[in-house]
Image 1 (tube, helix red, strand yellow):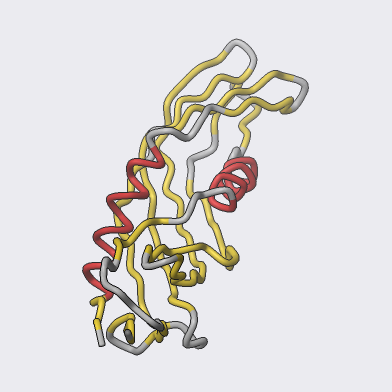
Image 2: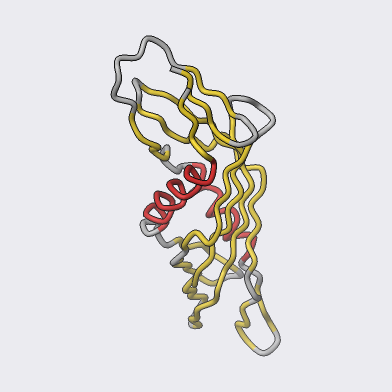
Length: 168
């Protein structure tokens, strides 16, 4: 039995997710009659992988944080955004290549101060950021966790309270 400690899996997943976040594109949308644009520079501040209810899944809790540049009409600015993500993922085996796949997004909350577009009007871009980042996370490619280069006849994955067990 090979045991992958959740702390080490979390560190590896955090590194891969940071690389993926560098490539998140800008987004534009019609907002209150103006063309709006958001450009994020997010990084993983916290990522914890732990045991889930199902033996085939692990629970993933993540906090992403960083500046987001915005443009709304003629106004521009930069605000700090914090995203809290709660989801489950499965560990899959493809010919000895182990990877982590997000199965469904349980919750995604964006924390961002309201943006003042004039002295009488401010807007909350959090719902737009949540929708947009939800789509980005849904399209996230599998996170590679390494390869088993041994002649293996069978493999079984099992989530436990302390680790992901790989029975060969």
